[in-house]
Structures are given as structure tokens and as C-alpha cells.
Amino acid sequence: MIPVTKPFLPPIEEYNAHVAGIYKRNWLTNNGPLVNELELKLKEYLDVPHLLYLSNGTIALQIAIKALDLKGEIITTPFSYVATTSSIVWEGCTPVFVDIDPQTLNIDPSKIEEAITPQTSAILATHVFGNPCDIESIEAIAKKHNLKVIYDAAHCFGTLYKGKSVFAYGDISTTSFHATKLFHTIEGGAVFSKDPEIIKKMALLRNFGHNGPEDFGGVGINGKNSEFHAAMGVINLKYVREILASRKNQSLKYDQALMGVDHQKIKIQGQTTFNYAYYPIVLPDTARLLKIQETLNADKIFPRRYFYPSLNGLNYVDYRATPVSESVSNRILCLPLYFDLTNEEIDFVCRLIKRAQNN
Ligand SMILES: *Cc1c(COP(=O)(O)O)cnc(C)c1O
Image (cartoon, rainbow, N blue to C red):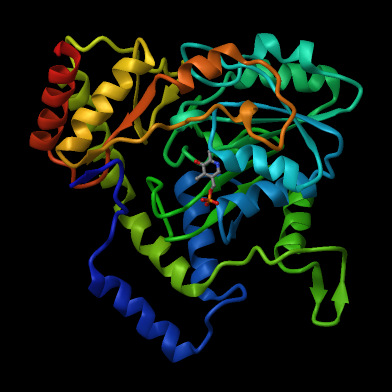
């Protein structure tokens, strides 16, 4: 079987060595030494001033919205994973969908201003598939209209924009370290901000609002992560350069093997060092997508329709037409991409795609 993705697993001996240490210390969670070590190592690797390690990327989005005290409407992208939208609704705000750019598949800044109302408090945009948004245009609009900016950077581990980690942009950036992501800690996530006051607030939110054992600074939630999860992160971080390099080679292999197949690739933002986290292809129509999917499934190859459906059609949001996102969602397929996927397997997948196209 060739799934769309497979979690990276480091040598078990390395994980067991950390588990032995956790047993010896009997310190399992609550800001333990491995959580601290992971935060320090991530800060160093990513070269960012502050970050907080959290239990997952969804709680990261919720904590970000809470920390900025957002109310009313939040402008967002319909082309993302459902957590981007559901977090807005979960926090009692209203998502207002703005269509995407047909080339980059990120929110189209030229359509943001017409969606701004007196109720708008922020822009929450996803750097989809690890490809940075048009950050300059979004910052300029946010500044002009006094809006906060949150980036859902769940796909972005390893992506640099203008030589800096893409996590460094926005009032807050959030990410996910879920098992399916390029860098993972089984479950996990993080928030990033330049502003130490915002970080302090998010640290409080992460830990039930505790200021001290008997003192609460405000309402909080449990966003902490465990020593066992942090151990996986500390180890996986040693392998992340290798993972990034293999993703790049595999993507170049796909580029080559897909020549002759009628499809569109995403356009990568300028001044970007891309992380090649996913391999999405946009097909000319849904019929061709379904044909390819069926042909691959018959040989136990399971690409995924990321992202489908377009989030503006969810049954708990106000529908607002976003024709580009709706059209792309109906035609996009993410091909298998994971650490030990071989060139032979990529060739096999692409031969089947060609066969499906020509039948
Ligand atoms: C994975 C993902 C999330 C959610 O992260 P979890 O760690 O699974 O909670 C949020 N947004 C996007 C775009 C994602 O891909």
C-alpha cells in the first residue's frame, strides 16, 4: 500500500533512551525538561525569538484568537484544513471567506478589502501546502484597517520567506506537529510571536490561567504537551534536514515523472525557500481527478483530496461564494509523499496517472 503520507519514525532505541530518562525523573508533563529542551532547540533551529510548545495545532489557533482578544468577524481562507475555520467559530467569532489566488492557492489580498466591515477584527490566513501567503500585501491591509494577523502555518516547518522562518511573520503564527506533518511530535503544535507580552499571555492560556499554584490570571485552557511527545520532537529535529532534503528530491522526481500529464502545479511565492511538504496537482476537471483516484486506489495507492470540500460550504458557516476555491477544491489531489517513498514508487504512481489520463 502507498498512503498519501506516513509518519516519520526515528530509531526506536533513541526514543527508548528518552523514555528511560522520563521514568527515572517521574516527570511526565507540566513544562518538564524535555518540553523545555524542545522549545530551546526549536527556537535555535528556526531562529525565532519566542515560541510555545502546545498539545496540537488546533489549540494553537484557538489560543492565538483568544490571546489577541478577537471579536466579530475574522477574514479567512476557504482553502485550508477544517481546523482553520472551526477554530474561529469555536472562539465565538464569524469567519468571512475571501477567495484564493488561482496560482498560489493562498488568500487573494486583492479581494480582502471588499470583505472588511466595522466588525472585522483580524485576518487568519493559511500558508497552504507550506507556500507563503502574499505577506507584504496582507500586512499593508492589516495596518491600514487596524486588523490583527494570524497565520496558520501548520504546513510550514522548514519554509523560509526572505531568509527567515515563515513562522516569524504575523502578530501570531501557529503550527502543527501532528504525526502527518513534515516535522512531528506525534501530537503537538506551537505558537510564535515577536511580542513577549503576547507570548506571556499565551503561556497563561496554555496552563489554565495559572499565575502561581493558587493564583489565576484569567480564563485558560489546557494546551500543554507531555514529555513523551517532546521526546519524539527532540529526536525528530535531528532528522529534519534529511526529511526536508528527501521531500525536495521526491518532488523533483514527481515533476519529471508527471511530464505529459495535463495538470497545474502551485506557484511558489517569490523569495521563498520552500519545504516541499506536499505534492498537490490541480487537474483540468473533477472527472479526471476521479478517474485517477480510482485507478490509483485499484493498485492500493491512496492520494487524498486536500482540500476538499471548500470550507465556505461547511454547514455551520455563512456561505459566501468563493468560485476559485470551490473550483480548485473539486480538482486537486495530493500525491503520496513521505520519508521513505522511493523513486520506483513515484514512477509507478505516475505511470498509473498517465494510464488513467489516456483511457
Ligand atoms: C494539521 C492542520 C491543523 C491542525 O493541526 P492539529 O495539530 O492536527 O490540531 C490546522 N491547520 C492546518 C492547515 C492543518 O493542516
